[in-house]
Image 1 (cartoon, helix red, strand yellow):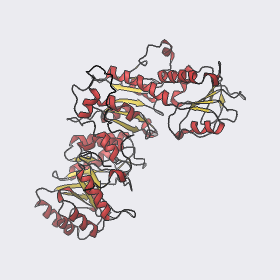
Image 2 (cartoon, rainbow, N blue to C red):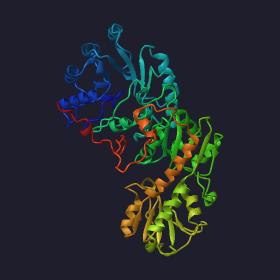
Image 3 (tube, rainbow, N blue to C red):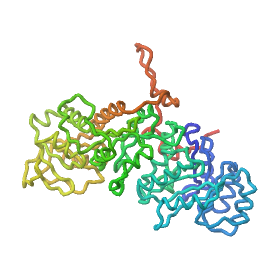
Image 4 (cartoon, one colour):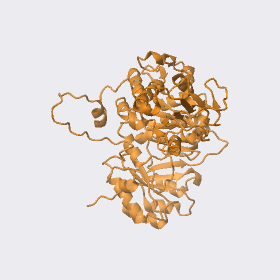
Length: 531
């Protein structure tokens, strides 16, 4: 199976051989990607031997070759003249360009020259570094900055620099903690930048590089003209396996926005500028998860925004806590509005569970809550008579916070802690008949606990779907759809049926690529087409 034609438009692939992949196989991968719309093949002299570079020169047209010099060598000029690429990247770390090479470059009218930086002095801020590069680099050379970035604040500084001169500035952030969490930014800009790189799934060089599947999904939503690129996001930590992007992608396609995964660090949460930085990057709508739920209402109000009740007709939701939120919208006039739809989703999922397991739970089930996090206040409002157990310490407390020494095993344990924050197992007396998990992840510790004690298990899928439906009602109230479809994908998402239904079953719709149905096996993606 191969990716659809043009699905890699604008991207670059770094070619290299591996112990399990010969140079011949690597070249075949590159040729296949080029046939699918890839723009450039990067040949790095620190990843390929000189013999391999020569073989690649013969295998690829020079207008597809990006030759990147990364190691000091005495024959730098001779190598470049022999390869004669249309794109040449010389690392700043190598020092000044030799005069002989500069003279040859000046005689090549079609050559695009890039100066790239891959390290940063600890004593120099990102802003100072970018200013220095802009001042010292000749105006006919492209500046590529692929350096470690520590937080969203630094990311925004780099973004502003890139957008100030997008035809010359290339900003490819690398998360300094190695998490790859700035992949969302590379996907956001996509081919609006002169250079972007696909991740080699067999041996990733940079975790922040998007995969071929992620790239194909991103390009389903066209990039608008102009400086700003609006986007929607799931904001929190962890977000890597969130269902939110795939679930909300059809809706946000109508608004011309991709849905991206924005992972927030503790350092980010302590920044007073986090929300304004995200807005500067182009954020227009967000679903917010832990640990950012308590942060959201405060951040919205600090910028003069309004935190509202969720869109619902249920009067009993009026008493839900307003100290945590999960939904954000920036209106066309710039106003910020947020709400929490967790109460809507939690009650709907709980009522469904009570109806489905009425016989198991009995008429008056004893309830206990393990964890809580950003949902703690809401859980106390919805389950006022439940016993609350702190997930971090395992201490048992009453709803008022007073410790209790014993408590009969509850009928239902409401599980509200994810894998990343799970530290201690529940106390030994917690042996419920049913575990009602607010997480839907396959690796939720609540699932493991239910299996351990032999309890029935209900995952958080209904909770997710119900609160997500309320989120979409909210976003539709506050966002402005595109005036007209900008792509076949968006058009299909926005078209309404015009014919009356017939007796015959409708034709199955063509499935649009999402993170769940695109191939993730690189051997399938890179499969060589048969003649």
